[in-house]
Image (cartoon, rainbow, N blue to C red; front, side):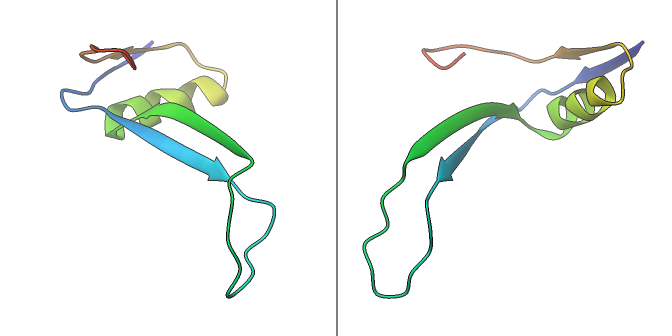
Length: 64
């Protein structure tokens, strides 16, 4: 079991665009928000490797 503590987490926002064309208007076709911060990212990597992990972080507001 890996325990990570992230006292200052963040939200990582990713936009999906069909292409990047110079001089053209770029419109996002999708958006995703994921929890972030060093400890959270370590816990996500540990979980992706198939190990047990717990991430401890403060959450609040509408996104939390």
